[in-house]
Amino acid sequence: MQFYVISPLFLITLWWVPKIGFSLLAFAFIANFSSNFALTYVYNLIPGFGNVAQLVQNHTVFLEKWTNKFNKVYVRPYTRIGPYLVGIALAYIIIKRKEKNSLKLSLVS
Image 1: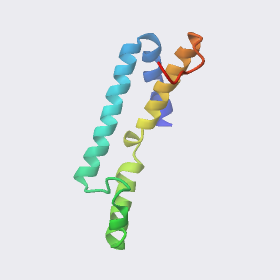
Image 2: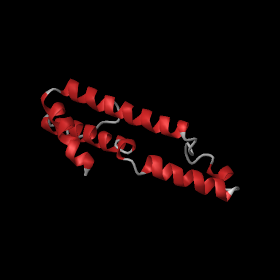
Image 3: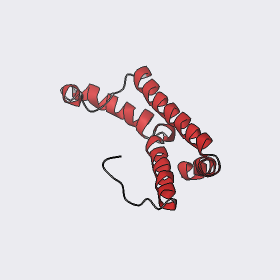
Image 4: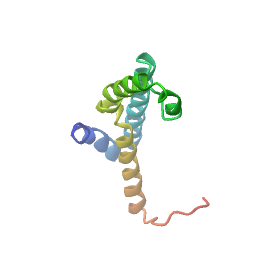
């Protein structure tokens, strides 16, 4: 719901002044990436699924790190807004393409 409430901030700026709208989207996306990185680094969380096989060997440590990652990163809205921002940008691009009647995407530009 928080994303739905703040989405007019992005949508209105994209519609009226696209450069500012995309700049705002880029700033929010960089802030999202930075917060994810900082939380993972400061709390020594699992950085991804690449090393899960090694961590599973010690179940206690793995469950503690997994629970910390879930509580500190996965649940927080400011760390999950990235995909929502990509969706807003893509929706804007698709709408603008339809307005220009360029319905087909070509593989070669």
